[in-house]
Structure formats: C-alpha cells, structure tokens
Length: 387
Image (cartoon, rainbow, N blue to C red; front, side):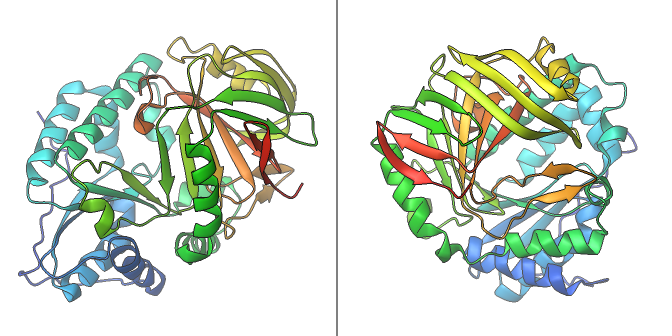
C-alpha cells in the first residue's frame, strides 16, 4: 500500500480557481519559457507537471502560466520520504507508478522537474546496491510506459540547496546560473548542432583526441541518436513514430555506441565523483571495457563503482555538448563540469537504455568529461574545440 507518507497527488484543472503564493520572478520567466519556447503550448492542450516538494515554486508558476494560455493543467507532487519508499519498497513503487499512469491518460505533455530528490543521502542511506539497481530499472520501465501512451516528456532542471552547498554557492547564486543556461536562445546553438548531427548520421567510426593524450575510437553506425535542443515541435509530434524526451538545459547530441567497439586511451586531469575530484587519471578502453584505471588522487571513488557487480563495464553512450551558458564551477581545487556545457564530450560507461541502447537501466552509469576534444568522423575532422 502507499502508506501515510505518500503525498497526495494534487490535481488542479484549468477551469478551477487556484490561489498563487510565494511567486518568484525568475521561476515565472522559466515557466513561460518552458511552456512557450519548449512546448509551444496552446489553448486546450493538456499538460501535467511532475515535481517534488522543493520545486513547488516552479510548479506554481507553470500552473499559473498554463491557466493564462487556456491549457488544462494538473500537478503531481512527491517528496523525499516517498522517493525513499520507491527505492526500498517495490509494492509502494508499483502502486505509485500505476496511479500516475492512470492520471496521465488525457495528458499530451508531461513536464518532469529534476532532481526529484532534495537530499540523496536521506533517500539512499543504507539501501543496497541491488535495490537501487532494481529501482533504476523500474523507473526506466515506467518512463517507457509513459512514452507508449504518446505523452511528450520534457525534463527540466532546477537548483537544489543540497547541490548549492556541495558547490559552495548560495542557492540564489546557483539558481541564477542554472536558469540562465536553461533559458538560452536555442536558435544560437542549432547551426552547430545540426551540422554535427548530419555528419554523425552518415558516419561510422569516431575518433576523439585531446592535447592531454586522450586517443580512442568507437563505432556508431546504425545505433540510436538523439539531438536535444529543448523543444518539442509540432512537426515532431505529428509523426506517429515520435517517441522522445527533451531536456533543459538544452544543447546535447547523445548517441549509443556499438557494443565492444571502444578502444584506446583516455587521460584526464579532473573527473567529478560524488562531489569530490579524481585527479590525473587514465585508463584504456579494450573492446568497450575500462581496463588499467589509475589515478593520482581519489581514484578509489571510481574504483568502488567499477567493483559494483551491477555495473556493466561497457562504453554505452557519448554526448556532444553545445550550451555556451554553462560554465565550469571551481571550489577548493575541484572542478565540476555541467552536463550540456559547450566544448565537452561526455563518455558514459553503463546504462544506455534511455537512448534506445541495449545496456539496461539496472546498470549504474558513470560519465567522464573530455575537455577540448578534436572529433574525427571516418578520418575527417568534424569538430575541434578550444583547448
């Protein structure tokens, strides 16, 4: 059963009156951007907002903006207590997912506000790796079931106090940085994204090199690829085969890698690992698997992940990034790169199911940022980033 700590699923339709409280101007602008620029929401459209208690301000503003447009809007609110139950109790998780799927029957657009969890230490404390893997697979299956209903999903990001503290930023400072990158002028990124996307569609063998000694190759021919510009257009939604998840901040091209195809050396000065920094690390890809991992400092953080028996140690996906508003955050000698930040290629070991790959979501994943890469496609330079 859902137990007492299951937060009531709040359904608010456009025809009902709704009292707005504690509005935040920045989130009001963000809400307008989400509905108008990303979804092109129209009068009569049906949208559901799925967030957590720490994202109520943004939920409130999206509801208000949806009402102003004349759309039908509902909201689903969770919290950390429920999120912990979803990880530790499969019965609770299944009942919650069934309830949400029932609520989404009339929905055209689902806006998911990430992260759902305000305090990861509370949610995952004492939870076994097996249960976390099962929860990840359940969440992916849940997402796939939503897409089967032809619901269009937009994942948007908000800052949390937990992340701000880890980065030694005030919440307002971190919020300003995040929203600026989230509300970027999408048109300024599209030419470069479309150019690389076209080359990748016709390419097969990709080589990535850097001035720090990274030199490895992989193949992609025929594997799934997703370009995430943050917008769900009418042209996309009119296609009966359309099944995709857009994301904000926008600006990535993500693709799956052919199994066992990764080979070569990766040398990196820094990699973030659980809000600490692994320094001066290197490893080899041999038939897609990481081998000979060494690091000058804090390498045990990643080594512990490699020892996780649930991790499928295979290169699963690669992401090319174009969002120039995202910046490196430095704190106490640590560097934290942002997911869609321009000039970075992320290489990810582990699950790629969300992109249509064969490595299941029950496998954890870990991503490495390749800074200032030169990208060759079938022997020709396709992109050379500043070093």
